[in-house]
Length: 292
Image 1 (tube, helix red, strand yellow):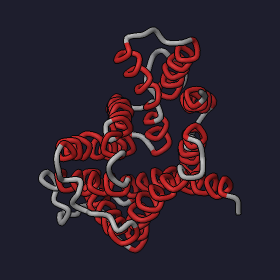
Image 2 (image 1 turned 90 degrees about the vertical axis):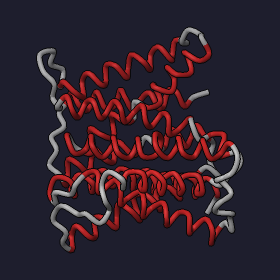
Image 3 (image 1 turned 120 degrees about the horizontal axis):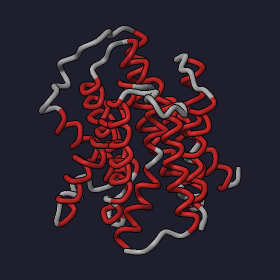
C-alpha cells in the first residue's frame, strides 16, 4: 500500500468516526437521557487518560514534561477553553438540536479563523475570502431558518451553542500551536482532555450518573470514548504524516456529510433542500480556504 493511499484511508477513517460519534452522542442524549455535562466529563477524562498512557507506551514520552515553563499556562488555557469549550458546546448543541446541525455549525470554524487572521493582520480580505464569508453567512441562514425570514428552524439555544462551538473550535485549532512544536500531539491533547474533564468534574461528579444505562448505552459510550475520540484522533494525526495539510483539511469535510447521512438514516432527522444547500455552502468554505 502506498503511503498516500494509507494517508487517505486514515483521514477517511478518522473523520467518518467523528461524524458517527455525533450521531451516537445524540442517541445517548435523546434516547438514553444521558446528562450532557456528565457525558462530556466522562468522555474527556477517559479519553485523555487513554491517550496519555498510549503516548507513554508507544512514543516513550515524558508525560509530565508539558508542566514546565510557559507550557503550564498554555495547557491550562487549552484545557479549559479549547478542549473543554469545544466538547462541551458541541454536545450541548446536539442536546438542543441534532448531530448533523451541531457538526455543520461547528464547521463555521475556518471562517472564524479567517476573520481572526484578517483582524490581527489588519488587512482587507481577498476576493475568495470574501466569498467564503458570504457562503458561511448564507449557509448558516439556510441551515437555521430553512430559507424562511419569519422563524428559526432550530431553537435559539441550539443556535447559540452552535456558534459558540465554532468559536471554541477556532481557539482549539490556533491556541496550542506553540505547544505542538515542543511536545507530541497525543501528549497535548491527552492532557487537554484529562484536565478539561477534571475541571468539569467540580461542577458535575463523574460518579453521579443520570439516564438509562443498559447494554446498548454501554456500547454507545465505549464507541464515543474509544472509536470517536481515541482512534479518530490517532487516525487524523497519523494521516498528516502522509498527506499535505491542504489535503487533510479538505478530506476532513467528510465529517459533516457523514453526520448528516447517518442522522437521516438512523435518527430520522429531516433534512430538506434549504438545509442541504446551507450545509454545502458552509462545508464548501473548507475546500476554498484549503487552496494555496
